[in-house]
Image 1 (cartoon, one colour):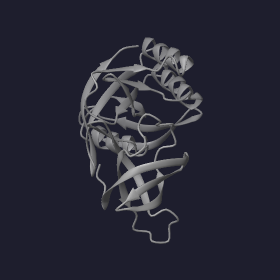
Image 2 (cartoon, helix red, strand yellow; image 1 turned 45 degrees about the vertical axis):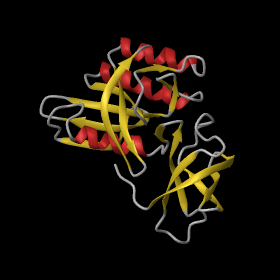
Image 3 (spheres, rainbow, N blue to C red; image 1 turned 180 degrees about the vertical axis):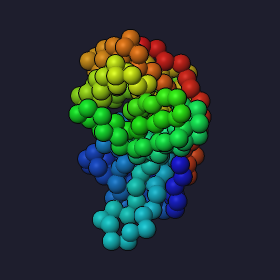
Image 4 (cartoon, one colour; image 1 turned 90 degrees about the horizontal axis):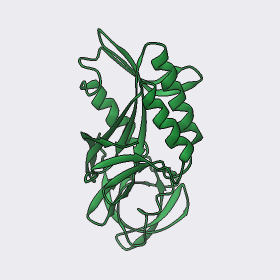
Length: 226
């Protein structure tokens, strides 16, 4: 997936989870943050950030903050980009070979899962989670408790019990991680449910990404430890 009209800035502050103050060419601007997560380890004072300029001149915030450097690692922090990247990955046969249908926002049970995908032999449901939290080359999810995430895992378990393939796909929005694991300290309930999902037949997949200021594309699978 690609962006257009990308510019560079320096992070100043984040008054709330929706907006940030950014220095762009010597001027302070209020920008939209496309990630409502905490991201405290990313949005640090004077961090280099990348923003997409909107074509809509009437918007209150003209820029969307989409990526940030953490040290030498560029991290995409746009919460919409994992689904866009997975849509491309699924359509290219990343999960089911020769897919004949890829449908986003698929209703299943009492939830709306991210994707339904099928080919001539199999039908599957896929739920996507973006990962921006990294510590010592280990990617972890979530960075805050997620009741919604636990609910989606329950729906994936139910899908497997009803004959579908199902996968929880964790999109690591950077390169350089060698391992993915649930963030037990932050959300032990989600971590336990993820382990139960695997035991019930849900596929747990972690994918890293090639990230540039202008793009993010899924690269390869990395090891998962539950």
